[in-house]
Each structure stands twice: as structure tokens, then as C-alpha cells.
Length: 93
Image (cartoon, rainbow, N blue to C red; front, side, top):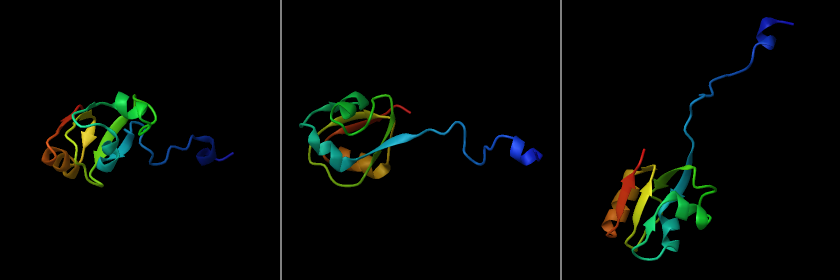
């Protein structure tokens, strides 16, 4: 059997890739005004699968509630929308 068929195929898939669960700003309207949101609360509402996931907040949609959210990453537009509504964003990654 030729050597290229005997060796494992790895390709260009990075072995240390970080995978994020994506959450849009419009999905945060499910929470009440003044809520403190973490990945545990997102998993409890069914927005992400497990609370162990890394979460990235994207700026699709709008929000009218004042919330405090603690997540792994957030896009600049999502931060601006939450701060404009009177809330706060804390990134842990």
C-alpha cells in the first residue's frame, strides 16, 4: 500500500480550534429588564446547548432592555447596542 494512504489524513483542520456558540442581540429580548446574563442562563432558556460552550454575541437585531451580560466574546456592534440601551458587556476571553 502506498505511503500516502497509510498515513493519517489531517488536512488543514486546526487541532486547537476554538468553537463558539453564536447568540444575536435580538435573542436577549427573552430576558427581563435588569437581568444579569451568563452562559448558564442562556442554556436554561435554550438559546445555547450547554453552559460550557464559548459564547460570541453578534449584533443582529436590536434590544430595548437594560441587561448586564458576561460572555466569552462580543462584536463591536453588539456592545454598542447593549450600552446604548443602558446595559453592560463583560468579556471573559
